[in-house]
Image (cartoon, rainbow, N blue to C red):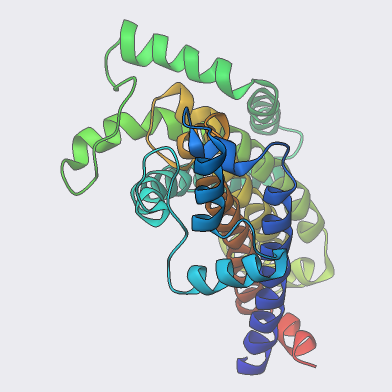
Length: 317
């Protein structure tokens, strides 16, 4: 197990290094002069020269990358040209909002998606399967922005059960926090729940027709034990793969949802950085998002090894 984890960790670190190179080079390849964006209205040659010298823009690209990595390893992600504050502080304030939103959306997707997928597979050809398929199709077809607007009109304005916008930390007021986060979580998690449902149903149908399930039934095991202990467990590898891939999309997909519900999360920080050409913030946001993808994939590999020991035995060779 340890050898398997060390192998995956080494691969993740190599991937993160390559991602940092691509992110750094991609930001530098953007059209326009970063010094002009940093100078604002003061664009005299002297001011531009001072900015380039201050930010090290006159140095070789390799030296700039080495400085960037050295600062990033110490937690220094630069200074925002829009606010003048450290980028790490802005990310530290925005990231918990997006992580909470992603966690609630993932919880919704797991409960609804896996539950509906199991029911659809077990009740194949019955009205329950048709209903689950219809709900999944609706969840995949409805655009995020339209669903968000409809939920706001229905459950925040017409029936004011939830709040339409804003954010309150969970530690400050848990009830008010959930009132403001439930609707965004439904918007962001509905599409993921539909994908999980379809994948769970397909994996469960394969498992239910496998020889080991027929053997379990022949031994006289209860239906719940056969479905939950045998078929579902072996179907979870496929489901975890989908969840791992889609969880990264939750972080990037939060951009639209956070704009609709005015949440001060990672998505809003990204939009503000793009429109104001805040290179330091944009670079840090892309790097953090990429690191989140890599970390999620590493965690998925760990979960694989727990679900199916054959995976870690094969991966450690």
